[in-house]
Image 1 (cartoon, rainbow, N blue to C red):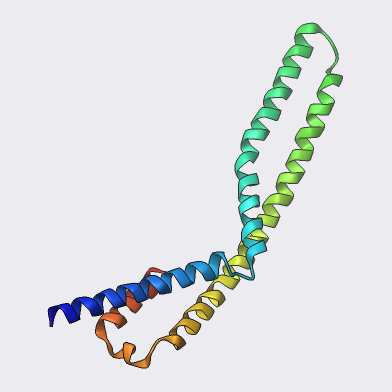
Image 2: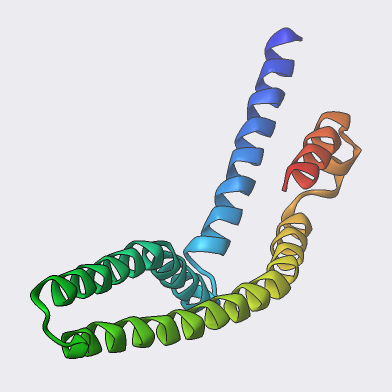
Length: 146
């Protein structure tokens, strides 16, 4: 009797593992929204390095101002650095708005994809599994944690 109970628990654990693997594949491998995930990744990276690049540009502007003041030369050498800084700011504004747009779109399709994944998988499970309290408990735990 104990071996039978252990086998049932192992089978349920394997079933839950298969369900989690299926969800992983659905989100990250077989997704029809793969371009959005990749775009979100790239935009997040660009947003992350913006402060570093902007600090470097501001440092260059300060260095050029100091050098121009010490040598008595005009501030014409600042123009290219300022143009790069302004261009970088406009690129960051566009990147930030695009990131917000893609993030909003992603937030809209994730619940739909959740429902699609769960409903498709739940229809493949045998009806008698829904009578098993352990399965119901694990299903509820999975639904709560996701």
